[in-house]
Length: 106
Image 1 (cartoon, rainbow, N blue to C red):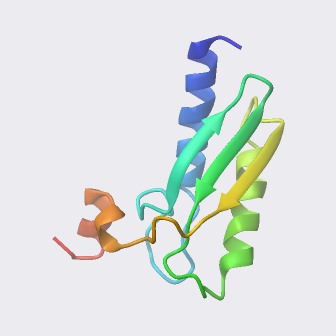
Image 2 (image 1 turned 120 degrees about the vertical axis):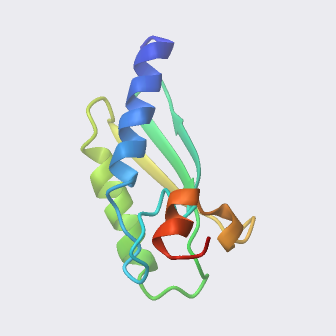
Image 3 (image 1 turned 90 degrees about the vertical axis):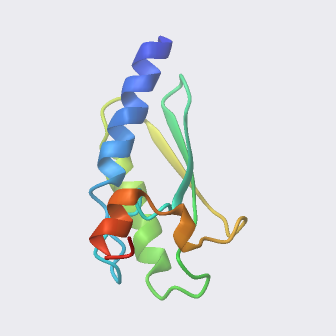
């Protein structure tokens, strides 16, 4: 894959992540700042490092599975690895301006 093709797939992954919502907050996980890193490799593997708003989130398994399933549907993606981390710990400062506006935090 060319660098341009890799960039296009990464952009498609971001668009997909913007359609996945935290079940407890009406904002998508990308704008919430839950996605720390997206690394798409030329062999078709999407490595996504993400966190949750709280380590004891009762919806953790569902959210991680949703990311796995939805990103796997992106054209060019052959495998998905979701790495769940709590380092650094998520806080509101990681949210996009759009998310803060949505939640009336600005």
